[in-house]
Image 1 (tube, rainbow, N blue to C red):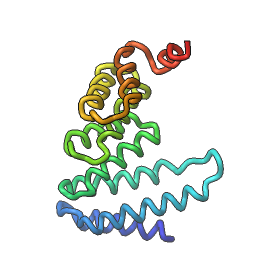
Image 2 (spheres, helix red, strand yellow; image 1 turned 90 degrees about the vertical axis):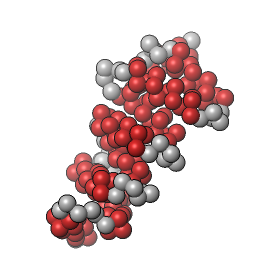
Image 3 (cartoon, rainbow, N blue to C red; image 1 turned 135 degrees about the horizontal axis):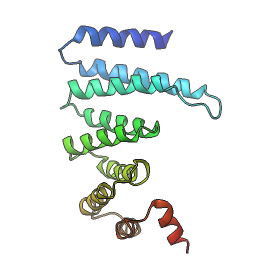
Image 4 (cartoon, one colour; image 1 turned 180 degrees about the horizontal axis):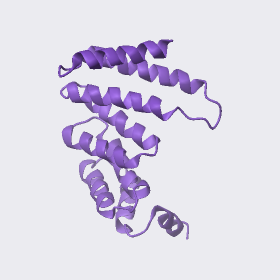
Length: 178
């Protein structure tokens, strides 16, 4: 019943807002309600079951609507971050990359930029085919350039990937284990 109420409330707000901006506080309430609904649903799943894609897509719609109508709000980059991660976790990596790029371009000072850069490097390295080594290089070099304070081990790991860009992640693992 709660899920049905949230759904109809979302439809009501979206249809009545038309070209008007979504009120930030109402948008956040809808997002929080949907996230709560998905959390509750996931607690009831049996091993091996996943949250239905339509549930994730409804959350994505709310997040994108909030971002588009409130781009200056402090929560807008977090919404893009969540969209990026949801698409990645549901194996829709091309879409994940689109929203990761959007986040990095529109919000260069985003607090979790390092994590997004790492995610983008991994998405292009392991999940988008054919593998785009120019994007893998771009994101890994950006990681090194923007994060002077990362650990020596992490820096060496990234440099190793850059030095062996022609190798797939599986080939790198084999090379390391030799």
